[in-house]
Length: 337
Ligand SMILES: Nc1ncnc2c1ncn2[C@@H]1O[C@H](COP(=O)(O)OP(=O)(O)OP(=O)(O)O)[C@@H](O)[C@H]1O
Ligand SMILES: [Mg+2]
Image (cartoon, rainbow, N blue to C red):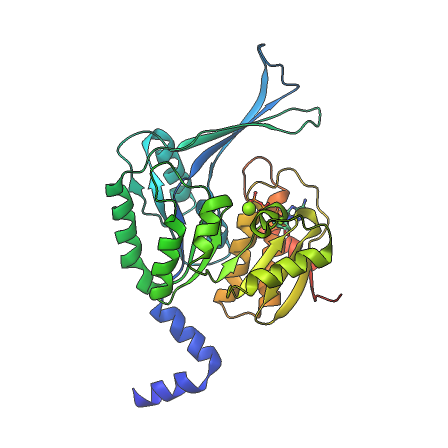
């Protein structure tokens, strides 16, 4: 026993291995407002008329749900939780079950998990989206979820929270959850927008990944140049957030971390739909930080995972094969003015 302890204390790799045994679960994802995403393809959309549908794609969505699915394909031990309800909720659960993503949601008694409809035409017009609000969360359901998370936290290494808040959830839901994670010494990711994001930032998450528009809203100003984006990432990290990644779609991402500032460039791909690219990026980064890779390598995996999801249609997310294919063409370098 004494010998074992000395071995673990003396060897970095063994220390990481030990941490992994003690923390059985790599990532707990929390999705307060998951969705069923339907992409409806038409030739051209004619309002107030009958439209012929060419094809429909239906998938489970929501930031935490996506992070859990991609992290699982990259070999992480995950658990997905949050709120589900009704038939659409059962669909989300079925998608996770088919992919063997462990999940345990709090089921709401009323309403149904929201549907997001996206109508895409063949004329190159921007899509038309119709997003439901999501079912209302009662105080009782919120307390049940908080309790569930409290029980899991001691055996978790990262918690990922994000997305919009459903009606009835506390406006500072993310601040409450991140505070709990920090008290349990669990690292956490926050990926949201607007007021819920601002409230969550007060509890100082470990990693954030706003896209350019979200970063502009956080800074309250436009970020018109590469320098402005890096400066924004620096300022956000100055609030005590160790990893700040600002994702920039096909341009890649700029990041500030304890290991330095980096720029990531994805390979050029044929982009079909970037829904879920940001979540895939988060999953890719976490999957490598968890095995102890340096941050630039984790960022490379995240960037490849985001690009891989951009190649899929509708709300579909990347598989492991595509991520591995894109990895060699993904470049991360130290940021230079
Ligand atoms: N067209 C693209 N070509 C190559 N890589 C892409 C493309 N779009 C996204 N990516 C990759 O995915 C990452 C995240 O994408 P993006 O900045 O669009 O995130 P996001 O807006 O948060 O997405 P979402 O919230 O829909 O999941 C980018 O940093 C990049 O690595
Ligand atoms: Mg995003």
